[in-house]
Length: 307
Image (cartoon, rainbow, N blue to C red):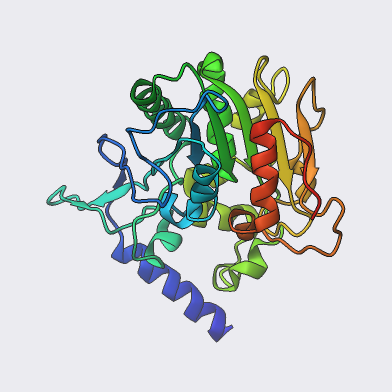
């Protein structure tokens, strides 16, 4: 009992210390982070690769931490590659001074207090999708391309889907990595975040703390996902490839990261297809060489490579 009381007291102290208002981050130009192989606005698409590739990161991370493997690999293959930081965490203001404290991540009272850096991908999905629309417009204007190819990891894929609902003609190819098309039950998050689990939080509550609004909106049965999945999960005229891993410990069950019914040229692929012993968890989808090869094949519309 004393241990429970101490834990509750610790949680309450966090809340009391943060008894100030949470407000959205002010609108500002998107950052063009220094990602190897990406964000060269002078890049002009090659005739055989006419669509620039826009990489969209997931929740509680950023472009640099997500794309230092895939971006240079795709650039080496001749693609123009771009990546921005989307969905910045809210900031806090004190009721007295109303001065923003940008160091506060704004992921929820506990998740925010446990992290000392600004994170991205945690805002409302619609907000991030609107930011992506502006970034895609910038990329198209800079490169002269009519359409782009979009690659999204985790929440990034959901942001891509929301963007396409409003801008279906601006992309021809979508590749998702560990994106929860039908939502996640987040059943394995308590094991990943034992400190939060010790406070009595289940998977969805932990997702809300760690991944912010984006986490809430990607739980099973969420209104956002119901809207994105109606009438189908994909967008006519856009080729989708969904890449999933049996070892995904964030998007669970893992098959929610695959299309329920691939249509036309759409494809599903497990990272473990043809190599059952290949272990790739949610984060390692971003750095695994075989997954990188699958993304390249998906963008090119070619057969998937063997392990």
